[in-house]
Length: 577
Image 1 (cartoon, rainbow, N blue to C red):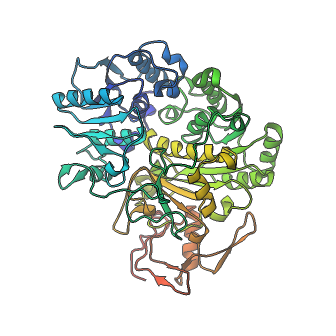
Image 2: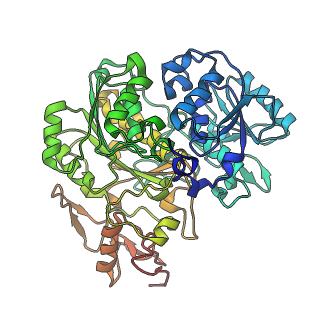
């Protein structure tokens, strides 16, 4: 069994050791289990839990950990589930709510539960983060577009329908004033020195995907922005029925069973008939803190362990799960896999250059697919959707898009730049990578549905041709604009072929052979040098400086240059061109 240091080895660089000394109170254990799981994965091990009746089968507790945890009180079940997942050797401390003090209170459930929690928090003098049972929340109350609103009262109190936003805010409050603080989140909650709702009035609906004023809508010729959460998307023409027979007869493939793939497999497993999970790696000590594997599974093949875990968590509703301990690397392997197992959707989350060969094989086999990966420290994530052969393939877009300013390099990047194609998601916590997985799962479920059952927002997204989505759990701005144009945690931007960057007027895709016009022209004598940097970094990493936008016969030269993510390849490029 792993020690605290090895279990949280990839979380400690993000949050430090202080969280294990914090105590969090939880009112509504069945409804708040998802937030508790996210905070526990960041190192919060001391809990004051309110006693509660056994959780229902459709509760967040049962959906997260499985039906086996509905046979006892919700507080006892949650404590047992956290211990079982992360291991008994960690210094857990579970006490009844009200018997000790705590640094933060989380409340989840009905309005009466949240109102009672406000009274408790005021009496205790601690912050409150509330998750309503009804996920609908008036976006006009959100703090500057971030899906968090304030609750009136004498203490700091925040309301959000999104468990990942709730966990991010809760952790930011716990880490406030430490070297691991989250000033980007605090800035969205603090206005004029007071904890309040931001002054911006977000807008949702009326054809506007953007959450927040001044954001372009789909079809405007600019990358669109939105919050990828059901409560914040425009009202769909209809909701995709996840119990529809058309979905229940489908087969899904997930290749790469790490921080993204293992969690996406759980969501796909709820709706499909057959799920094939593929990975040649084994479970390591640090995996359970961010992935679906229990601490007792360390040393087991990931594909086998995940198949067992999915059956346990989904119970009698589990599909047929096939675990393959194979490292897929080429088109021939993909063809053999599809021929043997079938496939109505494939999710690629290997985080390596193997994605390109696998995507070519899936395209040749006519299997809709998406490829997702996290950027360093999982501060940002990327997904490319390929529902059919008419849209750009993975090779058309990945590594060739200008997505705006890039974030500053992580400490790991500054010390050692990863080789091309290496997995770029370490270290991170479940709050970041799990948020990414939740968003990618929404996209995967929409692609899995037949076009006639897809929701309006997905139909609009595909019709606009913007099939590369970049989202983030952070908002980082070094003076050149928010990284990737994401001004709020949880926001997503969609990009298409109009954002292809290059030094020539056209670019030919090496994978599918199609020719695309270059929308962002590299206008510098050192274009070849920077193009090489783009290829080596596996994504375009310049801010507006070496580019000119093309269109309507006009070029708009930009001012400064930055090659943010490549510090070990070159010095910072911050001189005027």
